[in-house]
Image (cartoon, rainbow, N blue to C red; front, top):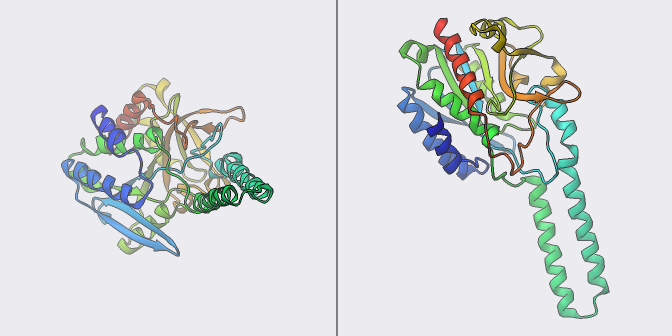
Length: 315
C-alpha cells in the first residue's frame, strides 16, 4: 500500500479539473486491471454539472459495491475547515466561515480599490488600479463558481483510493465477481456521483449493499456509520474483528445527518472512516480542503483494508 500511496500522492494528488480527473482515471484503470478488474468510465450529466464515475466489476453479479469518492475538494482559505464524514449538515454549518468570509473580504477589497481609483489624480495610475480591480472581479466570479483546487489531498481522499486498490488486489475470482467498485465524482453539495450510482443500479435491476470509504487515512480512531434502521452489515463487519478491543464504534446516521452527504441516496450502506470526536462528540476530520492535508495514518488504512478483506472473505 505504501507504493500505491507514493504514486498517487506524487502524480495524482489533485483531481479537481476534468483533465486532472482523466489523467488519474488512466492510472486507476491500469491498477484495477492489474488487480483482475475490468472497468470503464461512465459519464452522466445533471443540468450544468458533468459526472465521470469509474465502475469496476459486474453490477449484475455483485452482492456489494464499494464506493470511493475520488475527486478532491476545493481549497478553503481560512484557519480551519472541519469535515464531518458522518454528518453532511454539520459539515455545511461548520464550513460557512471558510466558504463565505474570503468572498466577503475580497469583495470589500474590490470596493476599496474602486473608491481609491476615484481619488487618484493621475489617469495612468488610475487606469492601472482599475485594471487590477477588473482582474480581481474576474477572479472573484471564478472563485465563486468553480473554486480553486486544493494542493494536497492525502486524507481526503487519496487514502481511501489506495486502500480500495490494495483491497482489490487481494480478492480471488469469486470475490471479484461478488464485489464491484465505483470511484465517484462530484462529492460535494448534491453529491451527484452517488446519485449517478442509483441510475446505474436501476438500469442493471440490482440493489446491492453499499460500503463507502471516506478519509480512512485520517489519524485517531476508526468508525463505522450506518442508517438508524439498518445495522446488519455494520454488526457483521465488527464481528469479523476477533480482538474486541479493536472493534470500531458504530455511528447511527439519521436523515438529517445524511443531507448533503454521499450516503443520502442509499438505504443499505455502511461508511468507514477515521477521525476524532470534537467537543460535541461528533466525529470530525481536520485539515482537509487545506494545504495541510499531506499526511495519513498508514496504520488506519491497513486496519480498514484488513477489516473489509476478512469480512468479505468469510461470506
